[in-house]
Length: 340
Image (cartoon, rainbow, N blue to C red; front, side):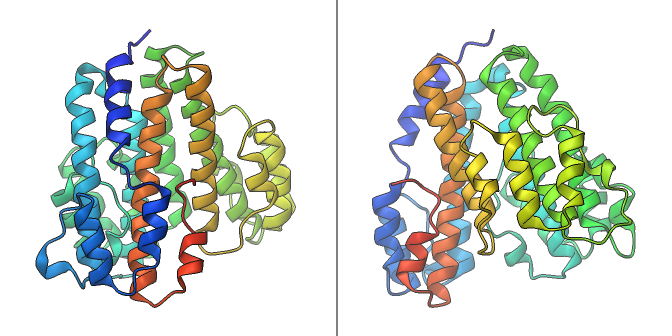
């Protein structure tokens, strides 16, 4: 059984530096980016003077601030860093999928970097180099050269003229799941970390089923289901897809999350772009808060902090781009992930 007391204490200390809901709501009412930049600077974000009116510059400051906090945890983790692969490689998985999608869409490098969190394997400079790659194949080659553990997931699909993004994301999730389950076993199969990895696998299966339910038949759907989860077995995955309607599929999938805070999220899928991602993250944070109360000596406080850190990254991005586009402050407040 892994001892987490010291890391939990460090996470609790670091959590006092999170922006928090009141501060974020205040920032949502900023009239422009320079005003937002001033508030972020006051709260410890490293905003350069030249970036105070730049959305990309403010996002860079957010990445650096969050990366600095992760580095503190890494220094304290020591040999437990491998056990915490679920935290760091999960962020890498998300980053690589986003970067591949951006390469397929030929988006500007700064947009591909939006919302990404640097990690030990993919620090800020590595993310920037990947964002400059002209194609998914070039991105895959670079990750292979760096011997990143998730690089094999991109081959050979990324080199195709029309890469299948769902296939790539499933391949990334498959390798991540195998590695994360193996690492989490060190904390015990009945432990919080192992159950959390299983929940992450369930979420991949839920997302994949929602996507596939909106497509025409003909795709090899079963290949997108990952073993190792707790709540979304293959029959439920297939039944959700067969509805051929994402809303109906969500209702089916909600039964797999019964008894958790994720069930109502899938039963009533948010219609706003990115709404599902934000709602799922909010539910995970609330669930981990429950876990911290029932198992305070487990890894739950540390996982809860990592999730809240991801929420802050999403919220800052949400505010930066929302304010830059002139979105109403009420809408920005409503879209925040961080709980009141």
